[in-house]
Image (tube, rainbow, N blue to C red):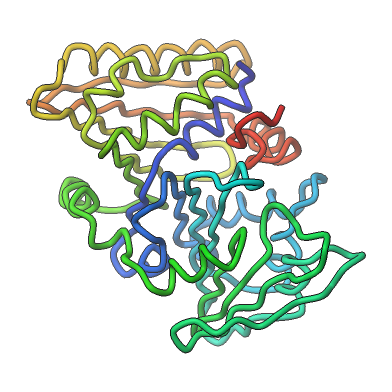
Length: 317
């Protein structure tokens, strides 16, 4: 497995995100999501700001880049849902704009349509206007958007936007509340993986096959996973992954998984002369993997050039 994939795993394999106090984009993420990455302090934090600038400046094209280049965003959530027919990667993005910043609807229209077919249609849902692509050639990643006050919602199709508008939100899910109580503060992001009804296990299976790596042998014993991270600057990332075992969990197996992940990451990073250190702590049914990565900037660039979302798209090489 390539090191760029390892970097992507660290930040994209968690589900049902929890954000810092005062954050808002997660309130529009439905509780049916499998994964969500929420990044706060987009403009004010130097590490997050560098990461965003590096992403929107990288060569590989992304339909969101032109919008992000032209606006000032405060927080971004990117959520992945169970795939639908014709949509192996079913997505919702929620962007909260900075105070006083307008939303460029021309840029939004460019995201949901292709250059050779700009036809759109208007759909009303719960008093909210949804704009959706209506031509024969519709993009597979994003084809609908809505604007709710200072937030732009961009989805693979109009149905996911309707779900976001109607709810329920992940904010009300029991697992979300438990994990929120666990973490005392947020850095640049806090995330939570919900394994109810084996949701997280089922999400991992096709990705483990694609990545040629089994990530969690103990996944069946997990109640949820939490992940907090701090992008210190372009070269340093500190974080913690928390594994919460179910009442009948084999805690030693969960600990083995945490230690295996830590060692696997260490070998990959050290092979690229990137400094990595980690440690595992166990308390009752909870296992914590804390890590620090230094010298990671070249890996960020490589990830963005490849395209981060392609790494978590089932079947796509």
